[in-house]
Amino acid sequence: MKTRYPLAFATILTQAVPSAAAADEKAPPARTGTGDATYEVVRGWPRYPEGKSLGNLHGDMAADKGGNVYIATGSTIQVIGPDGGFKSELGPDWGGVHGMKVREQGGEEFLFVAQTGKKAVSKLKLDGTVVWQILGHPDVEGMYPHISRYNPTDVDVAPDGTIYIADGYGMSLVHIYDKDRKYVKTFGGKGAGAGQFNVCHNILVDTRGGEPSLLISDRQNNRLQLHDMDGGFVATIDAELGRPCAADIYGDLLAVSELDGRVSVYGKDNKLIARLGDEPKDRKKAGNGVGPADWHEGALIAVHGCTFDSKGDLYAQEWNVHGRVTKYTKVE
Image (tube, rainbow, N blue to C red; front, side, top):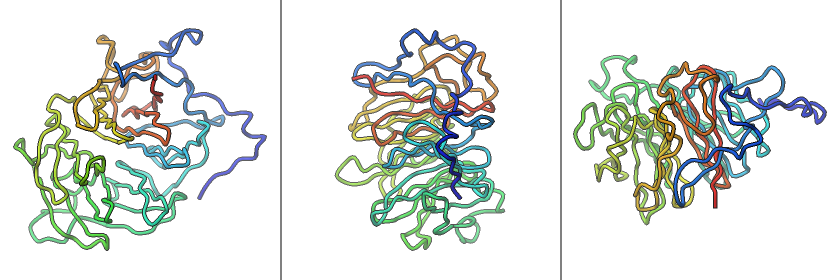
């Protein structure tokens, strides 16, 4: 159910709590990256009504064509409008959302979410209405010793409707279902070899080339793997990541968020262009308890989710009990 506020209520919108170490507001916003992947911080995003905030974050982000940004919080999915102001919440039934995508099917956009706590993957309308759910792991004898071993961290769908579920916090398997949610096959498994995973945290259908492919964030192996749509291993794109957690695409650009405190940006050929947000080497990073007093504008700490919006602006969502999201806009 959407929460709507009268126009007069908008006058009490305030910026998110600023860092004690934030840059002088009169100084130019912080920049990060290099060359064609140079970004500048957008200050004061998002804005909330009095008493509202991001809260404890351990999830992902997504954006629709209308400019709305969706943030998975500890208990709901927040919707931030194109103007950067808090718009509504989807919930409270959508607590525990971990991975999240917005995808268009049949001319309509939908949210696809993975919930680790509920061991479910769901397709939602943008107002939170449930279209369908896949509850629990595939019904394959011997695959899972107990339901507790199944903890899906992400989901994506191919242009033909095929569904891919990453069991990142479970057994490091990827499950494939057809467009009618019938189980097809499973690939991956725990390990460090080609095509194996140690926490397949995120899965992304890449449609930049002539044929779709799968990009899988192999978090604890510190690498990004490329697979074909049947699950076959193709190549390792980057083996020098800092625990990759999420990824998104805008145009030819690919962004990969890293728990060790940065976002890596690649071109259409999957060649690295820049690492964002890791310039200050003395910053605290990779901890979810780092508070505002130790935040530095533009410098990232523990990036768990990321997304591009409809204009190509980039967002980095931290794993942080205090709630932190940084919006960057590309410097032309």
